[in-house]
Image (cartoon, rainbow, N blue to C red; front, side):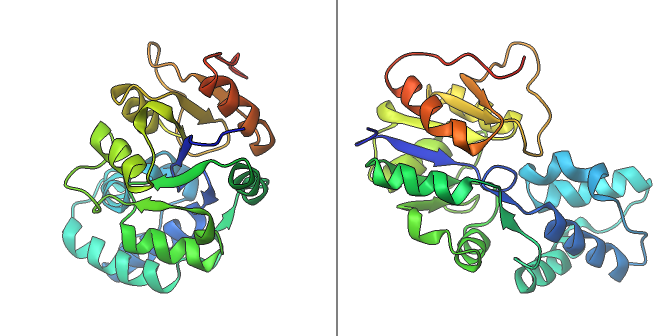
Amino acid sequence: MLTGTTIVFDLDGTLVDTAPDLTHALNHALAERGHAPVMLDAIRATVGRGARAMIEAALALSGIEDDVDRLLATFLVYYEANIAVESRPYPGAEAALERFKDSGARLAICTNKRESLSRKLLDAIELDRFFHAIAGRDTFPMSKPDPGHLTGAIRLAGGDPANAVMVGDSVTDIETAKAAAIPAILVGFGYGPLPPAGLVPDAVIETFEALEDAAMLLVNGTTPIPARP
């Protein structure tokens, strides 16, 4: 059982495949300024770093300069109105959340997406009911990779950082967890590239069916063998 344990999830690329809707919003903003669209694969790795990072990457890829703040404003308006057109939970995500809930764990979100957008997305795909806390990039004065974002999310959920696990898909998630001295599980199906040498997650899973066992092993002080190097 995981009673008393807090399981903290990143959102984009970890629980929910949001890249299509984010890319549509990005290309809408670019088109409004007369720029060509970008392909999803070209900016996929920036999704977990927030909308501004996506816009900056798109401009750099196209070799153009523009007002990032103006593009961001257009992006946010469009994205909020179309937040869950194609976004869906990853296979097995909802069932895993049900299992964690039944096992007595407390669940939280720690994401660099804005809190209001995170809540709207989770409500639209009917996952909001699982979470004791949702901490976006603007919930606290700091955001990932600052460890205070993660520990703040845990405490907001009524949990203890000494009994918690972080689940994410990016280098930023692993860095944040390591800085907070919290075990980190990397999902192998998300957006982020594999962490560089020296930044090793405590476990790697390729499906949500493996998540509960990995979390229980970490909580009990046993490190699972990563699924891939």
